[in-house]
Amino acid sequence: MVYLDHASAARPPRAVLEYFYAMQEKAFANQEAAHQLGYDARRKLDAAAAQLAEAFFGSRGGEFAVVWGMSGTELFHLLADSPVVAGRRGVSSLLEHPALTANLHRTAAEFALLRAGRDGALIPREFPADFAAFHLVQSELGRIQKPEALFVPFPGAVRILDAIQAAGRLPLQPGCADFFLVSGHKFGAPGGAAILVDRHAPCAKAFLEFAHRYRHVEYRIGRPEVPVLLAMAFAAELRCRELRESLERAHRLNGFLRRELPEIELPGGKRCFCTIPEEAASPYILHAMFPGVESGVLVRMLSEAGVMVAAGSACSSETGEPSAALRALGFRGRDVWSGLRVSLSPESTADDAKKFVEALRNVLKNW
Image 1 (cartoon, rainbow, N blue to C red):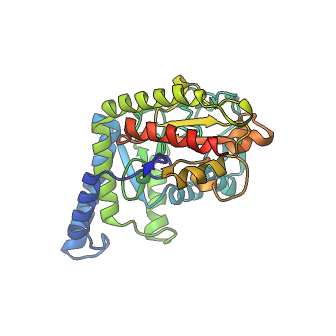
Image 2 (tube, helix red, strand yellow):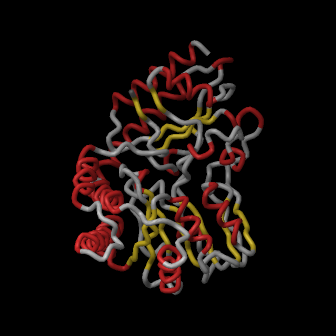
């Protein structure tokens, strides 16, 4: 089997799975228990929080507090209910993950969405905002944004950065946002998620107090499982330790696919083309358009051939709706059903890429 859907859920490396199994045996206790094992679990979680922050931000990791969760969606919910967002004026974009925008729409007093250019770059415009929430890497298209530019039109606004598709793959820059959201599923952990809060942000103290009440007093979200979070921190450290080498491999594989895909003839004599320019996209996500081909059918045919890719964001794959991301870029008609996402991991190989191209050629011959 060739698995190229790591933007949906990354396959955990063997070392992470072994660490997770060990933590299931050693740190299984409830971290809120009053006995020694509960104390040990709390101590391990504190150490894991420091490990996670240091993995992503190096020597500046100590400047960040960690709010744990079990998924990005759970933490989007917490964030939307917090005083940072609830009842406030906000701005985001048409290219954000629906789990983020649905929650922001739910609680914000006012909410504006930035549009995007044909290359996926968000188009800044001024808007009175108390908070601004944007992605670093777009989950379907792979487009990398520049947060330092996006946040400029909103001076004084709380800066929220969805780094879920970037963490463990691309460097995260401290200082460019007040909140960084990450998810273990995307960088090879068995689960877990976190908000990394810059302790220097004016809103940090009030937000951290709210997050404590939200879980421990109001019981609005559950208690995260300790072994999952410990494995998440371990996976983050492993990924960030190998970041440069992994990026180089991803660039090589991405470049190979960008050369090969446009050479494949589609039904009707059309050609595939890459949606986002190489220099503007994460090397781990390649989104391509297949004019005249319905990508949902293509995904199922490739799956039968043992190759796993995606027609878009996994969270929207069963909605029956066309790609919101492609519509935001200006695609219309049948084209909004023709996008295919190939997403790599540090373990992806040249053989994986070659088998995908071969399977794609064979499938399209029988279209």
